[in-house]
Length: 417
Image (cartoon, rainbow, N blue to C red; front, side, top):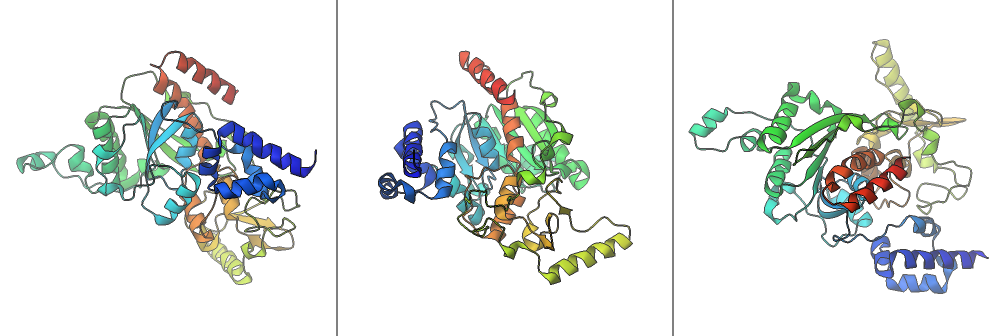
């Protein structure tokens, strides 16, 4: 069979598997383009051919294992993890216009993207099984509840969390009463504002809203070549025997290395980004190599802090290493993750490598500038961690659905075997 026949067969198999309408919606291409590809299979771009086997099946709300809403959605990393286990997103909120662009490019939902969560009426949000939110960390200013009562003002979580973005999470939970929620934040949430922030959050979720709540700090290094610790807070409306500590994670010492996410630069890689980051021979574009001036500055800066006994400086890694936490400031100088290059200065990661470092598949589109992409992936979640947490929560979301639970549990056991 020649390449033309191979391309045509792959396209036809994909259309038969997921349906024409869902194919067009998921890829963003027009009916006219699809017809041209069927007539001229050799004209199908390589990155499209690469993505075809990975396109997901359409999930209707009726067939979904559970429904969820995606708050402070970023570019959809939490969503990817929960969709992996049959979840259906029914509402999205994200205020940043560049994140909205990336999200809508990868998740062309009919419900669209709602903006500023503070202006959204909780009653207007669709009913859902799970609330997901990677909310920003803010300090709470606690006023005396007795004083508020004497003035006839709000009390409880409305008093303690008003003016913070966590308040919007709490008011939506109070209004919609989902079966469960999963909240994600930086590890330092526990010590933020001398522990006051975390104390108010837990009090609100447990005492004010009445949920059974557990939390756990998980390092993405279990799944990815990056040290990235985040706190995950999981709550269930109804009592059950969910045990967050029982979630088994791959051994840290056996986690993947940087070579698993780096461009091989030997011409073997399918360039899913059409020359945006790679040259024709598969080498990384030289623009990602540090300029002599920046490299000199970073070395001098690191030496200055070393002489003072500080640990500040750049993070230089190779294929057999793991790296520091990727941050939203990566676009500034790339200092936290620099890649060694033989006979040359180090280079930054490309945005595609950043996406891989966060666990996003190569089918994930990056429509924004490098600066915005670095910010988005630096602010994102580790997708495999979300997938693991979603899988651990799933039986407790479905435990009242009879035989469907057994089927889902069998699937989970196969996935994690």
